[in-house]
Amino acid sequence: MSSNREEPLTFASSSPITVSDQLDNNSYHTDPSSHIGSASNSFQNDTFLSESSASISLDVEFGFSRPEFRLCQLAGTVDFYERHVFVCYKNPSVWPPRIEAAEFDRLPRLLSAAVGARKPDMKRETRLTICEGHDGTETSNGDVLIFPDMIRYRRLTHFDVDTFVEEVLVKNSEWLPGTPEKLKGWYVFVCSHASRDRRCGVCGPPLVSRFKEEIETHGLLGKVSVSPCSHIGGHKYAGNVIIFGSNVNGEVTGHWYGYVAPDDVPTLLEQHIGKGEIVDWLWRGQMGLSSEEQKKFLELRLQLNGETNMESNNKEVAGKQLNGDNITACRSQVDVMSCCQENGDTCCQNTQSTVFPEKIDNPDADERAMKVSTDKKRSSKKLVSRSSSSKGAFTRKVCAMPTWLESWEREDTYAVLAVACAVVSVAVAYSCYKQLS
Image (cartoon, rainbow, N blue to C red; front, side, top):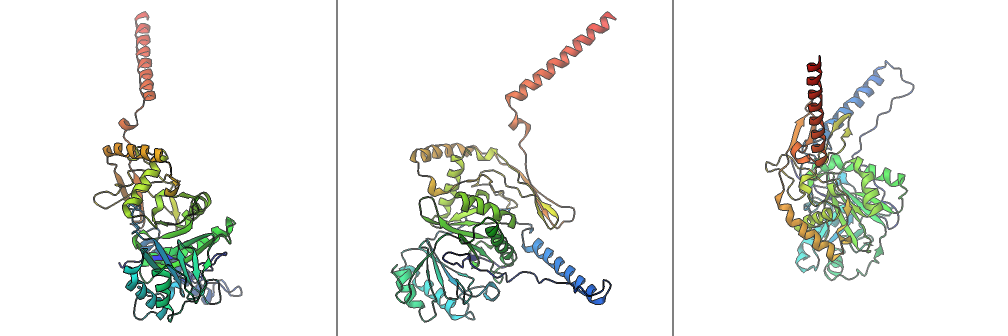
């Protein structure tokens, strides 16, 4: 299976990006005037059933019901980088597997080549991604968005590529032909690069649609924008989402999430955007941190929130209803750094919600947390089992429960002693009764 990575991006400075769902299923409507038993109506019903069956099949193989969904550790899976550049260009249906492909249109192809050639001269490690663009809208073809700078340049053409890269990305100055516009609010990008990897192509569009629905439901229109984007890395973690926005200190951060399902969208909006807290069990990492730093930051946050012995705590997540079948995702609070089993079969994600790493600014708390981390060496290995459903099409992941010895407490001891005393008392009373009779 080929790799699929995407980077989300398409913004309006103050209004959500308009996104067309390129991969949505065609809808079939029955002619009201047709007779119930007519050949036309029967053909339409058969076609609809066929499309529904195909959609379920795709979800089982490439979507949120695929066997490997939520089996691996997420924290630390984002490569280090410091700046993310998005060029708005057309839509996912016309994006080739690689933007540097010779057959691709000149603007994204030449920009990719120029960024690659000048990377050694750039002071900041830079990523380039494509997001959706439409002429005549707030996100026209050729618009360039840059994070964490939170600026947008309008209407870049292939004639301007070399000058733009030199002035903006190498010299960190302004591109004189254009005027940088300040971006405000939150920006969500969903990897939807179907030609790069089927998993992103199947998972991306439903996530974009759900984000748009929930943004309106939560009254976030004009504050949160969402757009499909091209490959960002980690196609096996689809659905992949990147959220850019300002933290409590006013610093712009880019947080990556993986294994995101449509039902997780309200949580991301309410917890990450609404409260400024990371959704730990979906968190892959963030812009500006190395892989090891991402792991350490997550571990530190868990410790500061009371997780001083993560290996001994297990949690089961409520089963998700997908196409009428329950899939219970195991999000065990096993050690986040070593939850993947050695055989590679399974891995659980932690569900504890915590604050952003930028909020941890107490040196004393950091020192205490680091001392606690040394006690974590004595972790015990937890078993996580995978069992197939009766139809074999879905996978259920079940977290191992702690043994009776691990969960034994003082109250249990008292209870056992009380029961033993009661039994002895009954035996003595019965013996006396027999002697008297």
